[in-house]
Length: 129
Image (cartoon, rainbow, N blue to C red; front, side, top):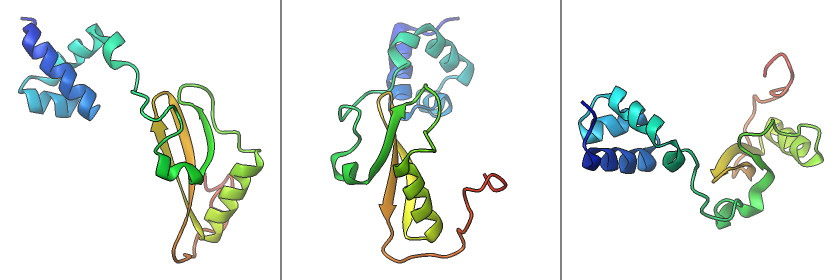
């Protein structure tokens, strides 16, 4: 039996909030198969991530952005000087690298550490990655 419109609305709301079919199923009290069916029937509503900051990420993290790219297109340009520098700083233990997302955009961050760490030498060599 298909879920009622109220249950569908509740599933969609919970799924948009958590981005997890399993958490949405638990919160609404339905089987996860029902949630998957609702997601498949409403791909136009749940398919895209919401862009909150114009694709640039949180304003307080903008100084640390190394590179951006569309989330569904290709991979990072590992030959760019910015990414090479960020990787070298990560291997030196002076920076942390992480990714973020703003809508359809992935953002690569390089954030300075307060205290350097060791043990990251040759982290990005082909044998290790």
